[in-house]
Amino acid sequence: MKTEIFDKLGITASLMCAVHCAAMPVLIVILPYIGLSLFLDSKFELFILLLSSLLATLSICFGFKKHNNKKLALMFSVGLLILLLGHFCHENNWTSNSYLISIIGGLIITMSHYFNSKLCSMCERCKVH
Image (cartoon, rainbow, N blue to C red; front, side):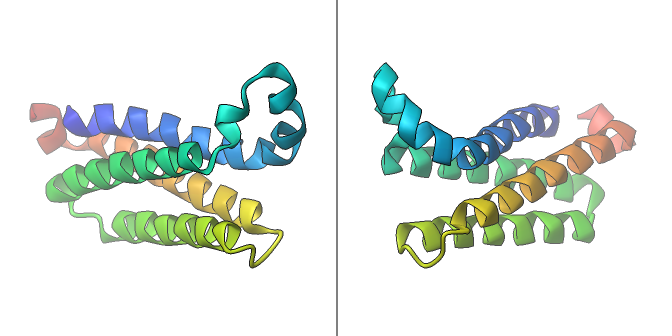
């Protein structure tokens, strides 16, 4: 049951992160005009990154304890590394494609939540807890 809640929250946070990165070029122009420049702040971006990473880690760890799926854990790990790489590239102005890198990482993490949720819905051990 914990895993299901973390997966739902994690899917939401990961998608928020991906949408935030995808919409950033447009938001940079629009948000200051409507008084919502808070969403452009690097602290807000870091908060979303940390929240989605924490929820994903908890969810995947709880799921891994029950169904021990190494492919799913690897998928999550790769997604998290790509997401962090995108954030790091953005913060250091290494590439103009940092948003694309972050979007890919966020979507991989979202998929790992989705597959973890599907595994838990089919797993008898998960249904008992």
